[in-house]
Amino acid sequence: MPTVVLMDVSLSMTRPVSLDSSEEFQRKNLAVHGLNMLFEHMASNYRMEFTALMAFSSLWELLVPFTRDYNALQEALGNLEDYDKTCVESALNGVSNVVQQEWGSACPCQVVLVTDGSLGIGKGSLRHSLHTLKHRGDDKKFPLPFPFPTKLFIMSVANAEELQMTDAMDNLEELLCLSGGDGQIFTVEGPLCMKSVQAMFGRLIDHAYSPFHAVLHCGNLSSDVQVFPRPEPIVMDEEVEPMPRSVNTDLEIVGFIEIADISSPPVISRHLVLPINVNKEVDEVGTGATDELEEEPSASQMAGKSPNFCVLLHGSLKVEGMVALVQLGPEWYGMLYSQADSKKKSNLMMSLFEPGPDPLPWLGKITHLGPISEAAENPYGEDDSKSPFPLQPPVKRSYAQNVTVWIKASGLQTDVQKILRNARKLPDKTQTFYKELNRLRKAALAFGFWELLKGMADLLERECTLLPDSAHPDAAFQLSHAAQQLKLASTGDSQYAAFDHNIAPMHTDFSS
Image (cartoon, rainbow, N blue to C red):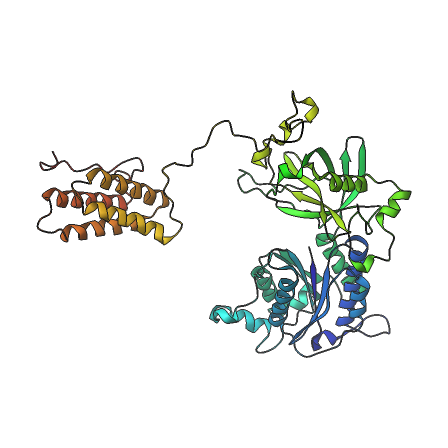
């Protein structure tokens, strides 16, 4: 999950901070100290993640594009210049442009906004931006929410009491809400100093950048691994009492399957897996990195001195064209596979399936899978000419069920026109007329589309008044009867709006 660090370099960040030491510091110095701490942590624990650094005041500037070179990021922090007033909206537009240009709109991203809580003044200030939200045209929309999944972390180089003296905290909370609410506002606890700012960035690291360490097991073999980014707990909506489900720190490989059999399954997230004691670039069979890390020893070279199951697994999956099914928790599975980063580099990846015993219907229940050796005959054939997948369901499902679905307005219009065509051919089309009418009535009741029933009744009454003199007398009776029944159903009265009830043709002397 890439990170964008958005650094406020407006004049308010140059305000001096009174410290016990004789050296004078600015708020910008404290913020730079905190960001250096964050970059040092990411260089040690999140080195495979991409990070970009942007600076903003009334305008924004991309200082360092997305990179894994944390030395370049720290060097850019040391060369920050001071500019004019704060304009958060302009900076957020810049973030949107930079992320979409590099990653598109599907990749989730973390945005770390570092500011002093001063919102700017006049037009362009955050206060002005939030007050004008509801009075904008489509061409001047506020950049939040971003078109890509986002976690927004606001690092305020000010304590909560200072922010609450004005409406700064309220505005920052509204900004967080507009981003989707998936983030947090961090403020300095206690007096403003190096230690308190360091503690604030420490809380950010614990919350969003703590490494996920796990042990990967396969029979008697195991390997300590680190997963990037950290798997987030998920909540299943269909559960009666939803509880967050987290990935276990013990990952158990339960079997292997060919890539062709698993195909391209639906997943909820993808993660990079690195062996903890082999976290450098891997040639041929290891985990890839960018050219910036090429001068470091490769994991394949290190593995020669220190055998590692994770490297062995990655190479085997790549050569054999298979994936490993891994158990993440009770009735929760995922898969490990090799993904090429370039011609010479590849990554060991882990994708998480939806929790449940059978996340991939064509494989059936994961617990029902077993080794080929236990089968009466080879399910793939002697020459691998067939496959046991996809599994056929025990009951053949019929897709010819009489279910009415209106995805577009044209579908509804077609059904209404069909009823009107049959209405003009009464009494010859009486049975077809009522069949189509009852189909529309049931669908409208199922959707709670009461207005459709009333509108259809009005159309039938209009058709009745437009009948020519040569029309059969029974046609007028049937149209009036059908319109009356639809009006009664549109009231929602259980006596007339029962779903299983059908409107029957009116018995007249003409119809008998």
